[in-house]
Image 1: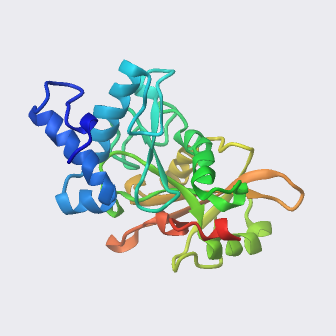
Image 2: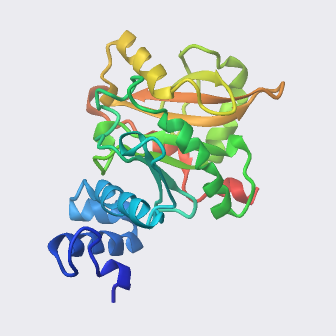
Length: 269
């Protein structure tokens, strides 16, 4: 049986087609949104949940459910939501509250949009809460997949623990990672990445803008890029982030989410 709040439509009368559809979306979340969405071939499931439930509930009752949070301070066009992905104990998704299909959208990488990576980084506290451990910045990563390597057509940034082997590899190469893009001389999760460093406690400037500049210079379409942003700290204590980008070459799939660990093994260390 569906819980009571799933049996009513927030936009229409009980039992309406829209209400039943949203109820199915939420009920499907109990078996994992990603797997269900793929099976149902509905690539708008994230958008429907965020726009049709989280935003509406936030506006009407100041309750972001089923999202963990919704930020509409600057309006829906500049807002974002954080949703727990039921795949993995600690994985969250940062999702814009405006319609953006993904990394290939022409506005991504421009100053028109807010810095969604900053909001995604703020969501790391939820990862620590789920891990039941105060995780260091080097244990947290964020990632967006290329257009051909995703199951949902609403831009979303994965926020979760970093794979332990990835963190170790980055630690070993940290002195070689500077303020310009360079090929990382070691494979991460079996793939070659370009890397660069940015200073700061929060990811500024917008990593999308930095990636877009590099993509234009290389003649690469943004939709074929994948990007991860990993928290890090220099040996002198300077905080910053390692940006990791990969291009989907020759029809391949670029999937930086592979650098994250949805089982969060680092929480046990």
